[in-house]
Image 1 (cartoon, rainbow, N blue to C red):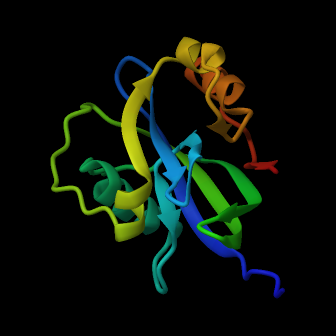
Image 2 (cartoon, helix red, strand yellow; image 1 turned 45 degrees about the vertical axis):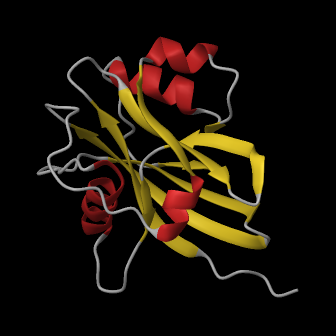
Length: 160
């Protein structure tokens, strides 16, 4: 079986005025018991910058628009099985803040996102430490706690 080509993408650790982070609850439509929470974002289109990818994906998935993208926090490389296929993903994660949690644009989820979406939710740092649900990345509770306490890495972290 061929090794999947890495898909480069961008995600956003988006904080609201109360320092809650937006996560998307997704599932594999072919294995409904396999579900997880992840940051909004997705694959980079040809010719797009990673900042453009963050803006587009956030608007499509949540209806929120960002004027400013903050620092590059981490890069996460993952390999996983989804919809009967192996995948290889390299996601660049950026920090951003939003003054509102109310969508300003019409959501435009892809067909695959519609099949896999369970819900969107704003989480407090404390909520992340107590959930039994799968979080991607698994280090997310500590990362959010550190970032909402004012820390940002000097150089993007590498997370597996």
